[in-house]
Length: 67
Image 1 (spheres, rainbow, N blue to C red):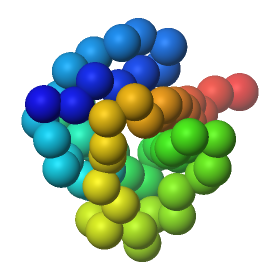
Image 2 (tube, rainbow, N blue to C red):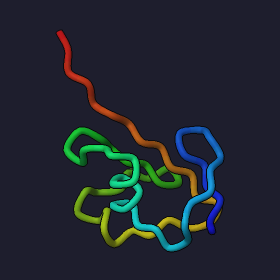
Image 3 (cartoon, one colour):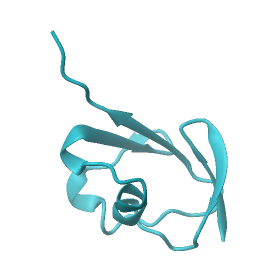
Image 4 (cartoon, rainbow, N blue to C red):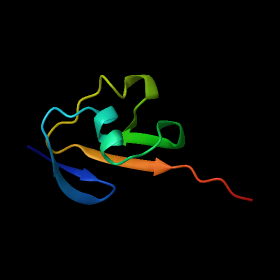
C-alpha cells in the first residue's frame, strides 16, 4: 500500500498504481482533467507509464464548461 495526498486529502492506494488506473478508479474522463504529480503536470500520453509512489502529491483538476 502507498500513502499519498490527493487533492489535499491523505489516502491509501494500492502500490504501483498508474495514473491511468487512478483516473479509472475515480471514474474520471481523461479528456476533461489535468493531473499534477509532485508539482509537475503529467502529459496524457504518460498516464499509463507513470506509477504513483508512497508520499506522492497529486492534484486533479477537472475542466467545466460554462458561459
